[in-house]
Image 1 (cartoon, helix red, strand yellow):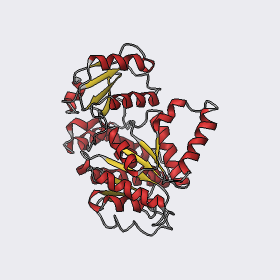
Image 2 (cartoon, one colour):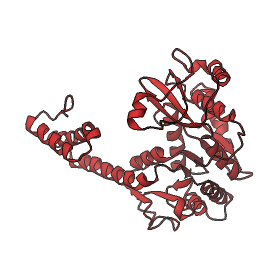
Image 3 (tube, rainbow, N blue to C red):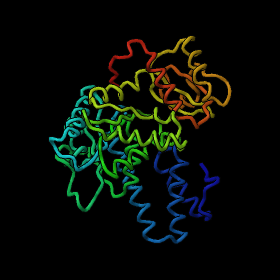
Image 4 (cartoon, rainbow, N blue to C red):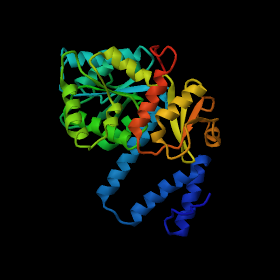
Length: 353
């Protein structure tokens, strides 16, 4: 290994960094380990303020700890519940969050919330401690995590909102959004922005009201009448969310996103969709005709596992589709995934993974 492009500028330090990186034993990742070490040295040599060093240091430690907590559970799908800390037990929204959590846990999913009171407590109460994660933010006016995750090894505490949100987005395979304040709106709009721009993989997002509530219908009316009407977002972007007032239907929608679709990866500039089932010639032709606007060139086609995926052992046994995606039309890509899922035989069946 050699530090080809990203160096400290000091040959002695660069040699010491290479030696230290080698000592970790992570021979397939030495370039990234060395670059992290170079970044630390360059921060010190550039004489940035102690406050800047504190931010980088704390963020790195928080993310390292979060990765270690989640690592044993990587193979288990997880749904996140967002919503207000101010909603009390007995409120219909609390019951909706609790029922959603229970419905996901009943199908072997795990549930993540912000570990505080209100909706965050309700989601974990429904899921049960064994199938719960708490992603807590340290605030001066909230003393500790809720009783359903307190003192659990799956509780992760964060100082910074941005590292906490990175963890939610990295670990979640689906979301249920219930009524909430600025924090919930922040989470909702950042999630949609990241999916709209392709900065996070597409995942199912359910806007969950309790029966008779108008919180999310009013939100959707605003999006439609102001953002879509002014061409500030595409009408297709509404495909990124699904609204319901039924917790069981919300849970089924999240699970159903993975009925045919499994995951995606870019390989040599092409988007590869990994699937739960084979897709026949007629179905591929239909998709190619309906979603040709997503393509830079070529066609949607079946493909074998790529050499890069084989090298990484990345879902090598799954059927695949490949397309030269324009990397802009992510809401339309979501509609393509929906079309794949809707075409699955017995499309109403439960999907547990």
